[in-house]
Image (cartoon, rainbow, N blue to C red; front, top):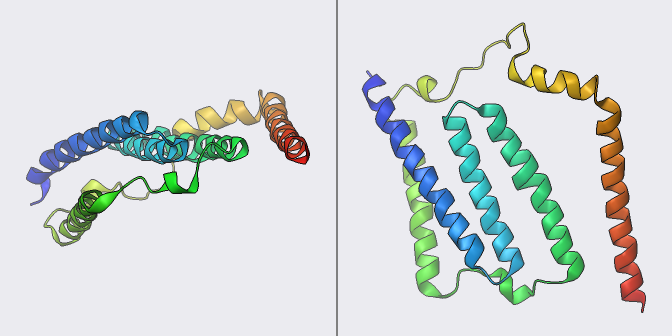
Length: 180
């Protein structure tokens, strides 16, 4: 019964997330505040992750969120705070009643879409993959994880120690600059 709506569902959401990614990227490059730009870049990363999931590349979508929207953006904001580039007044990126009104309409649209999905005749098991037992071969994640934790374990651990030393060095340099 719900199969005839499935191609329209995916097509609509593909274009929705594509336009969302383009809009967030445009907002990213036009912001003066580095903190506001970083927040728009996170929005772009989430839209790209949704596109990856829709293209049946769930692992790439999860890595997009964990690595880029998570770790890289935390490091970026850490550097911004360390260099004191952002001002508290710059954090409010939506100014005036029209920006807030637009944000409210976008929020209402997302809530309406969620409500439509929960009450629609679509079989949601077709939209969200069913949780099944992992394949015996290990799948995509095992082919990436096995070499990383076997052949390249030393390089992986040395990289983590190098990143920790870089963060500690940045903190020490920032403390010396404040002491002067």
